[in-house]
Length: 127
Image (cartoon, rainbow, N blue to C red; front, side):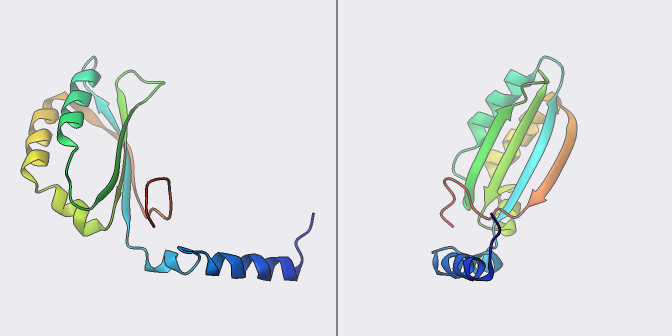
């Protein structure tokens, strides 16, 4: 089915009227990171324990998801959403985060890939 001009204009108007619609994207200052971390062989569970213990109460953190990679027994994916890059940067100075980094460092073999993102919407992101 082809979309004619009236349908396109109607859809655009509906998006603009919807709370958090098309114009909200430009005002969005959210910051996100997605990364794949490799644990030292056989140490993924110990690394997950450290991440779990240290992931609470970070001001500005909207979402912090840690997941096991199903195809690699030593890999972990971390997906973060923050209200701003400044909040993310400030979190790295928190005592509990610095302590977790120090504890985790010997268990981390490396980082495969990572990307900085700008979250637009998602379940749990009140934007």
